[in-house]
Every structure is written in structure tokens, then in C-alpha cells.
Length: 186
Image 1 (cartoon, one colour):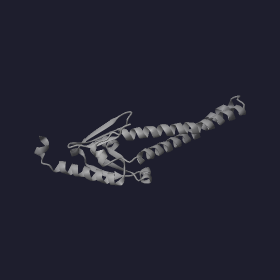
Image 2 (tube, rainbow, N blue to C red):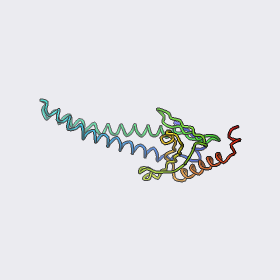
Image 3 (cartoon, rainbow, N blue to C red):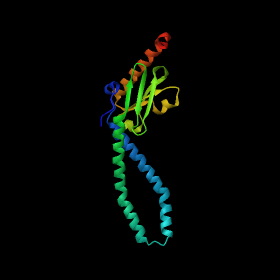
């Protein structure tokens, strides 16, 4: 797969640690979800099996097969999650043009956000728990629209790239806003 590069992404690259971080966080979320489903539905299913006229040896056989297939299913989910996160990383695109910031992400249901410099109200860098563990940073842009809170961020950069992006974006916004109105109207 070719990485979807731009001059901006080359200068301020995403970190490959993002792939591992997203894979681990997805797997933890899946494991926690499966745990709670098991806690909720396990007693119900076990209760249904024990009230039927099924011998305990068959019930134990079913549980044994589940215990055998669960780790294999977990490894398959892990591999598929890793492959998807790698694909996501390689198709993630962002670029700074004269008039806009363009961000494209998600290989299956692509989302593209194009933000004119005049609409950007704030640029900030943050970390969640897993970002802190992996030494990654997210660069967020605020606009007056709801979409900016959801899609207008570049996530998974190293500290230097995040700080460089933030500085560059703030300079672009400052230069664009400080230009006389007549130049913008042209």
C-alpha cells in the first residue's frame, strides 16, 4: 500500500506508533465489551442450558469448545484490527493549501473536511491516556461547526510534528485574518 502523502504530511508526519495505539485501544474496548456481554448473557444462557434436559457432560463439552475458540477468535479480531488500522494510517491525508486545510480519513467510509482559514477559531494540541503512553499528540482545530469537533483533527503525531503543525496553522490563520478585506474578496 502506498501512503497517501502530501507536502504537509511529509514535513509533519504521523507516527507509526499510532497503528499500535489504535489497535491496542480497539482490542481493549472489544475485550471489555465481550466481558460485559458475557457477564450479562452468560448466566442467562447457562440457566437456559441447565433447565433443559441436556446432560452436564454436553454442557461442559460446549463450554470447552467455547474456551478453545475464544482465543482463536480473539487473535483473528486482533489481526483484522491491526490490518484495518494500518490501512487507515496509510490512507490518512492532510494538507495545507493557500486557502484551506484539507483532512481526509477513513478508508471504508471516507470523510473529508476542508476548512477555510477564516473559519478556524482555535488550534490546540492534546493527548488522551493512550497518546500519553505512546508519546503521541493530536492537533485539533475549532470552528463554529459541529463537524470540526468530530473530524477536524490530525491525530497520532510525535511532539515536534504536533508543535510544528500547530505553529504553522496558527500562522496561516493569523496571516489570513490580518489581510485586508479587499484582498480576500477578489
